[in-house]
Image (cartoon, rainbow, N blue to C red):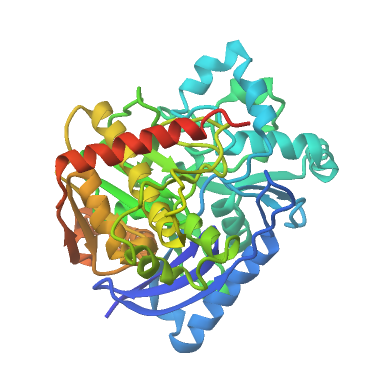
Length: 488
C-alpha cells in the first residue's frame, strides 16, 4: 500500500492528513489558529503560530503513522493572505494580513486612479480589491519600518502562506502559479510577475518568490518531513477543484468554508469575466500548459454561523444552527446579507456592510438562523448565474464540498435555489485530498485523469421547490442586497 500526505493551512486551522492510495484517510491532526482583530477592518495571523502549528500537526501524525512511509506531500493554503519576512533570518517582520483584511481600501482607491496601469492590471484577471495581495504588500512597505529597512538592505521576502511554508521547510523562496495568480501581480498568459507594476509601485522584484508550476519538485526537509518530497502546491480552492475531479472544461464546484468559492474549469483558455468573476489559474503540471478557471468568491459563509455563535450567542456550537433553523417552517420574510468585509463576486462593493432586514414582532432567533443559512445559498447562486453568463452554457450539476455540506437543510435549499442537482463526495477533506493526490500522481508519473479513482459520490440533492416561490425568494434577496450596498 502506498501513501501520500497533505499540509492544509487554512484560515481558521492547520492540518496534516495522510491518505492511502485509495484516497482514504489514515491519520490526521488539526490545530486551530487565533484570529487577531486589531480593529474593525483588520484581520491578522501570527506567522510563527502558523509555522509551529504545521510542525505540531506533522509531529502528532508521525506518532501514529510514520511519515517516512509517504510517497509525497502536497501543500494547500489560504490564498491572498500576505506576509513579509527577513531573507537572512527567516523571521517575520509583521503579522500576516489575512485575505479578509480591508485596511488597504485607501490604497486600492489610489491604484484605481493610476490610468497607465489599468491595462496591466487587466492582464491579471482580477479587479483591484483589498482581497488580493498587492495592496497588502504596499501597506506593509509603507507602514512597517522593519519591512522598509529590509527592502533597503535587500533582505526582504514577500509571500503568500505557501511561500512562507516552503521557505521554512526547504529554504527556497518560491510559490506556485495558482497562488501567484491571486496577487494582482502576475500576467495570466506568461505566468510571470508584471515588471511595469512593480517598477511604478516601487516593489522590489527580488522580494517576490519565484513562480513554479503547481506540480513540481519543490524540495523537502530532513528533520520535519523525513526527506519526503513536496511535489504539489495548490491554493485551497484550486486544490478543491482538482480534488472534485473537475479537470475538464465545464466542470464546476462550490466550496462552503469560511467563505464560499465557486470555480469552473475553462481548460487552456483564459475566460475574462464580464459579470464580476475572477480569471485564475486552475493548476499547471511541470512541462505542460496551464489550465485556467473562472472563480466567484464570497467572503462570508461559514463565518456567518461563527458570528451567530461568538458575537450574538444565539447558538453554543456551530452544529446547532441547522436544528434551530428547522424549528420554523421558513425564513419568516427575514433576509441576512453577510457583507462584513464588503461584497465580493459578483458585486465588488467594498462599501457594503452586513444587513438583517424584514424583521417584525413575529421574528425570532430561529428565523435569523435560517436567514443566515439561506444567505449562503443566495450568494452561491449569484456566482453560478454569473458563470453561466460568462461561459455561455448552463451547468447540469454542481459538485460541493466543505464543512457546511453536512448541513442538509442548506444543501436542499441550495439545490432549490440553483434549480440544479447538487452532489457531494464521500470524503469531506476534498481540498487536502486534491493537493495530496496531485503530489502522488506527479511523483508516480500517473495520468491526472486518475483523480477520479480517489473519490466516491456520497449524497445528491435535487430541486424540490415551486418556481414562483423560488422567484419570490430571489427577488427578496436582491432587495436585501440593495440595502447592504454603499453603506460606508
